[in-house]
Amino acid sequence: MHSRTLGRTAAWILALALAVGLEPAIGQTPPTENKGVTIGKPTAIDLGSQIEGVQGRALRVRVITVEPGGVLGLHNHKDRPAVAYIIQGALTEHREGSGVIEHHAGESWSVSTDVTHWEENRGAQPLVLIAADIVKQ
View 1 (cartoon, helix red, strand yellow):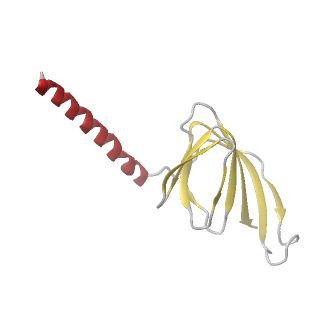
View 2 (cartoon, helix red, strand yellow):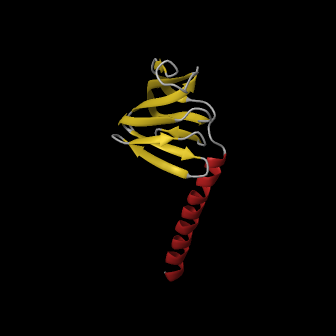
């Protein structure tokens, strides 16, 4: 009886170790294409005409919807800092060098120019967020 319990315990520990071990492997091959993503028509303003010293840049705001199981493929923010705010749902962000970060409705965060990441909607409802970034024109 004791050896049977020990065997089951060992099997559970092995299964858990394998499951945890797969997370880094999954992170090594991030998706490169968007899936289940709708990006609303952007609204933008030319910052060069508004603020001295930022010629050639615009402030752009978009509503992004990610369906359950949807993915924003691997991308970077070089030359394009951003902020985001979640209206509905939750977002799982996979940042290169920082691991996994969970963002939820009512939360905002920033993304600096040194960030490379991909995001996914692991939830059961669509994720709706507002993204604002400063882009080159």
